[in-house]
Image 1 (tube, helix red, strand yellow):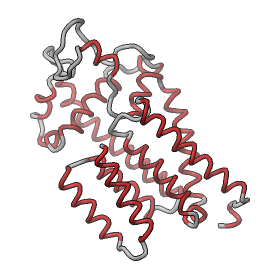
Image 2: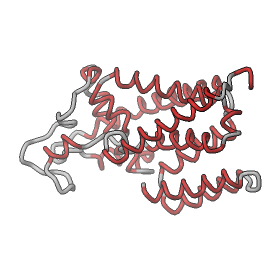
Image 3: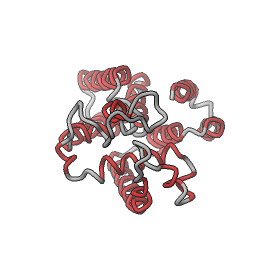
Length: 263
């Protein structure tokens, strides 16, 4: 992920400084060449999100419609994958027989990292529903384990891993730990951020540093969809500091009395 973030930062900064002289198609091709070399899904997702927000989606209403379509599409695909995901069950490993799941359909073999995450999300969101609505708390095992046994290829025993591992989707991890209230709070935060970004897009486009702060926070949040973020000490600090910079950008806009009448 460090390589992915460095590549993203370089090319995105380059585009922002020179975007009038560099065609968007060239930026996209550069990223796809990079993706071909490292086969990183996170780079693909970040690219699609940032390019879409920066160049194609200018309306908050259209963005909400797009977000709804993506959410519905994912839920449908996840539902269709459920009969395969539940086949993970096996006593030989803390994580289950993931290889058996991969073998059940060609789509699961395209990206094993993503398929592994889908199994994880199924186990922590679907199998434990509705008990997880109130959250399992901190210091509790995320996965069932057998004491004093190590079945995974990690250096620690199952008990240690079951207590500290995340779901590799920071928002699902927060939901599993703290329940539905935590997701509602994050929903309020992101509604405010995206609403501000789109309703005052012209202002932020004229203030390049501020729009970079918004897009940086959005990119960081996108990383959290497939990786650890809020549940880690270093990246959690980066996340909340980035959100603080977003808040400062909004405050600066309000202090300049820039409202909808200026649009």
